Image 1 (cartoon, one colour):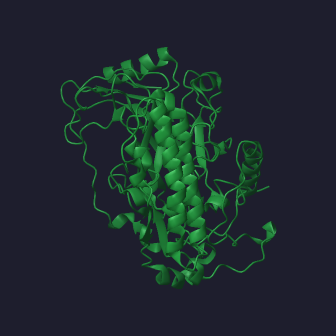
Image 2: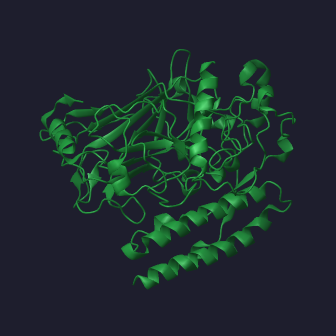
Image 3: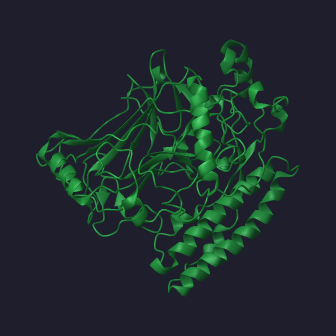
Length: 466
């Protein structure tokens, strides 16, 4: 059995286990993936370009607005926020077949009004009703730039087996203009200089590359208790007990793929798929084909997890169960204010891209880098919008905001050995069209407290530790 077949059967086994927790409902595809190979039984012709969507749905991000939700209402609010995401997904599915594209907006607004009302009521019962939440119900259609489509179709004959590169297998993106040759990008990485009080050390934890194939479309941070809360598939390394229903006790008692068994932290990010006409085992599952995520999932060739210091101060140990999200899964429609993940190529990592996928030269590999927030408010392990309890240090000086403490900064580097050219895409919410700017990473600190103190001591003393 070849490497691809072994990987596919491994994913199939994982999805059998995952399917018990995944709701298999949801809307159909706008343009169903029909590029499966003959061995998978698909004999339909490819979808025609005329059937592809030219618009996507843009809705206000309610989660970012809700920065202060009473603790007693958070469970209900998180559940209703996940329902808002599902409503957008279903409306986006309908967009592909609607003759009048605008017709999908009024029913969507009505559904959102009801759900926003439930959020307001839950917060009201907990003693803090939000103001003007109903103003966030209306959504709009956003025209999608189709530049480069015809040019890409003309390149198919030159690309052989990668004939569908850059178009996306289901007509859902990415497009030609989502890619750029890394050699054409100027160096753009500037880091603050270390000052006298800097913490210069590095602690490296080795947790593998997800060789054991742990995947699910959940997001225990943003949508706890909700199956398919992410609407895209995640790679996991570290804690093997992580799914939508994992509480702190489950994580503390879970197995870990990390070499140091004192690190039971959860590290996860959207999978990367080849757009080569091959189906995965999740082609008919939520998070996979039912959410417009198709193509072969790629196991990274390497994953590096480093905790580094602050350029102007010592760091304090992270609190156990601290949750951090870097990047924004909805940055294509939200804007790039929280788009912190970046793309590059080995040998060119002084050139980082946020809104483009890199085309790497022969012999170079694709690199995803996730720099996590390195300042903590000193009190909370999470916040209502999962952002305000942590912050980035000032890019120019390295200083944390007033009232925040420097903590060891997690830097994830995920490398892929994929064929050269525009033939891959990161999983995303359907309406985000697999844009590179939507990349993001998630982390829950489940270090043993003694080991986390050693991490901070290592970073503060300038050592390199594992």
